[in-house]
Length: 141
Image 1 (cartoon, rainbow, N blue to C red):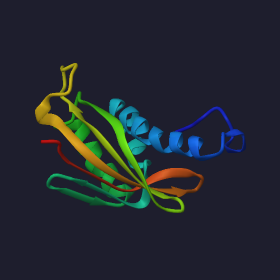
Image 2: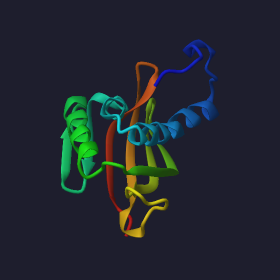
Image 3: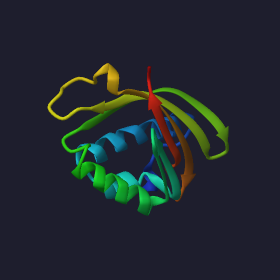
């Protein structure tokens, strides 16, 4: 996602890094709101993995194709919401981000309990930005 500042001007330090990590769900929300399969797939590493109930997609191309189909079909008019609930460092340049959220049905303003999820985001720092190596979600209840 383009920014108006150069990477050299970006803040540094643990707080800035946590903010960059926590911003990834916001980028997913924005990609989804625009029904932009390219922007959604760009959240992932080249060989990233998307796991949803009944779905396993590996690589940006598969993820892009899947999301384009979904945005034109069952996800048409939907939005997503997500809030970070935990952040677990795994190794240098790798973290697990845990969120709660879900898909807000077309025409609705609130997330229905039946559509609520918990998600695991395995993020790695690549090419100067945090990208998804693995995203997996499951029903909250």
